[in-house]
Image 1: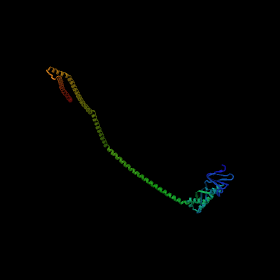
Image 2: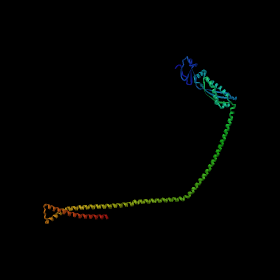
Image 3: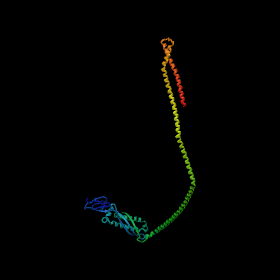
Image 4: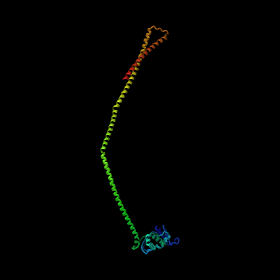
Length: 374
């Protein structure tokens, strides 16, 4: 946009030609842009970046010794509006002059502070020197709108006079002496360590020789025992062999006995048992057959007797017919006679049957006894 100006992050925008707040001669803008009315307003930029100034100055100490001192100062324009206005009024047209003026200010304070100190203080307390110079110049730098961030003393020398070297000579001598003592102690420690190492090596060699001798003695003893134990070991081995052979023979005999039992005794016992069982079976068979035969004969005899019973009764009747038998009670008497004939026939049948049964029982008993004897 025409007339709108924006400063960089490390710059301040200065607008002149119009009214400003308070008693400020111009308007200060930082961090944002502003509209600048053409022809009626004028805008300029002031750097807020870090600047550096070097100082190389000859300074005389309290002892009258000249020292060359080199220092570096890091500074910048302050961030507040008052500091920006002060710096702008002094350096806006020639901003490079800020480094020149800062170097001069610090050179003057450096000469003043070093003039009140000895060389020993300056060498030993360099940070104190920098702090005093920084504190002495802070107020003066603030008046021109500048703020110092750091002051670093880079080097201090006596321009070849030799005072600083002479001052450091005792320390160097003490340090060298300490170094020599340390070296001597180190050499002595090394020699002692070497002697200790040699002693340990000798002790190790002696111990090794003893161990070897003991080992050789043990080996010789073992070899002698082995030589003596040769026949004993052989006899022991033969005894063990005989023992093993005896055990094998016993095991073989036990196995043979088991084989004989399995091949001879067991089959014989089985055959005897089979014969006994067959004999018992045959006897039972004959008994059953005899009982069956006796039963069959009785049945056949009874049948024969029954078949002959009518003939027996008929014969008895014929005998009665030829006799002079008188029946007095008529039909009832005849019935009684007939019944008597039948009863006589049955008595005869029972008598005959009893004799046959007794004969058959005797015959069966004799047959059974004969089978049992067999």
